[in-house]
Image (cartoon, rainbow, N blue to C red; front, side, top):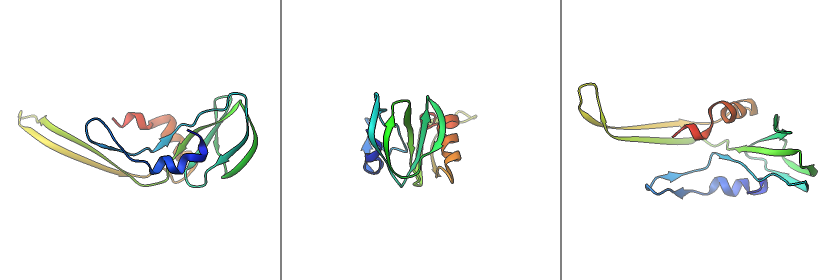
Length: 129
């Protein structure tokens, strides 16, 4: 998807095969092949960009005219508070008693673009599962 549609993508909620609700927290838009005439940078989320695949920080919101192919928006990270549920069923204890554990973690990525970059490059959404 493109960066211009980030607000719509963050508001979409889907249900996976196991019946759990999934909410996107990080978007990775398509990169331009050669160049783009204009790139619309959304104002809500953190918008991280790269030049020659090197992190260059956050882009300011607005329109960027003539965006070259060696520059790309690498990640769009939500600023919203996210609740992550990790239920565990029939987990054995040290006494071999089966218990159900429901862990709920509420977090927000931020407060600045450096924290968003640390989340992307050091922790990552893919490591939550």
